[in-house]
Length: 140
Figure (spheres, rainbow, N blue to C red):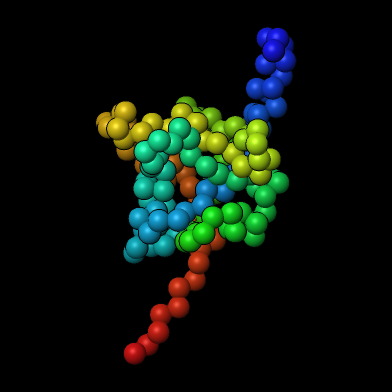
């Protein structure tokens, strides 16, 4: 691969700053129990072995489709690519799935125990819930 084709390939993976992405929230700790419209930092914790956070690109993956990508989705949050870049992170298209994006630059708590929670908190403050599963409580 030539330097020009490698550079072109990287440019093809870049997303415009104005792009909105969906982050699927699958664990209960991702949502504030007292205010279900508030995203918790746990929604942005890298799991062991992960190198990036997964997201879906709104322009090519509508909310209705994104919600079905994983089982057990409790809520979906939106994030703005430009704001993530302002935080020192990047968002790239997944070359293997045109609907999928990778949030890169997030630190794991194992590698950076002092810095990772701060980044997770910034991401949580920026995220906005755009859909959440309705829970029906039965009266007894």
